[in-house]
Length: 177
Image 1: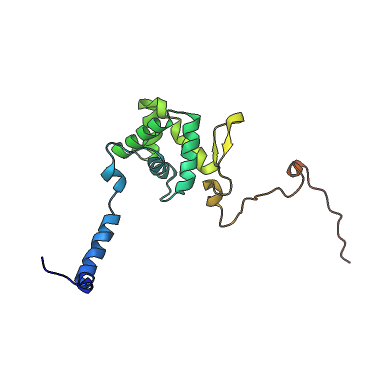
Image 2 (image 1 turned 90 degrees about the vertical axis):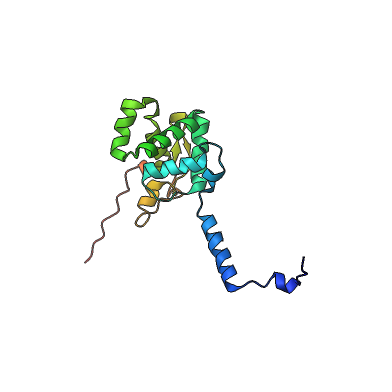
């Protein structure tokens, strides 16, 4: 084996660098979850994909998605399996929003509650109801983001607790004259 100097080892031609850069770029485009998974993947990443389909949003906050997913799993241990079934149904049949509800009610009634449950979690930031309701988002919920260009949801109360429920105090008329 010929002896190579250290300088020769690190001297690459321009086309070698370009080839390596192209290969690295191509590798980043591969869907690594599906490349290395033994079977259908599940969990927060698939939940975010399902959520994108249901909300119509191209991107969603994955950290928020994990919090919502974990809360939904805590509420119902069947949620991972049911959400995976729902995602598979939507993708395999390429169901539109209009088709989804009728398909679920006629063919998969056990899954019919999932779209509303997931949408409520994303748009209102709440999982559960009544005494078991948990607020996971307020100003970061999708309903607040939809109007964020004009409105900012308050993050604190502007008066004493419950003051918002009282009728406003009338101001004395100002006379100009």
